[in-house]
Amino acid sequence: MRGKKLRERLSNLRLCETVEFRHGGFNFAVSAGRYRDGRLSEIFMSARKPGSPIDDLCRDSAILISLALQFGCPAETLLHAVTKNHDGSPATATGVALDQLCK
Image (cartoon, rainbow, N blue to C red; front, side, top):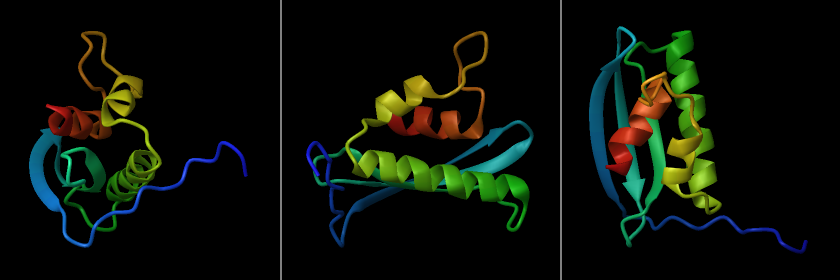
């Protein structure tokens, strides 16, 4: 298929960092893998409440972000696209996670 972007493969060993934060009264943890050149390649996110709807949303958003990254979307583009508060700060835990990882 013409114009189709292939998914960039992840190496078996990759750098990983974990960031914890609080947003909207909940505790969150996000772990991020990076390509050898330092670009963000995948994230795993948890609301620290296993089985809760907010934890499910975190995991799903992490999967979608990871796929977007692996198909070539820059993390900064995703950060720019997520919902913001009136002061420009991230409105959601997903936005806060991306903000932390893009610094």
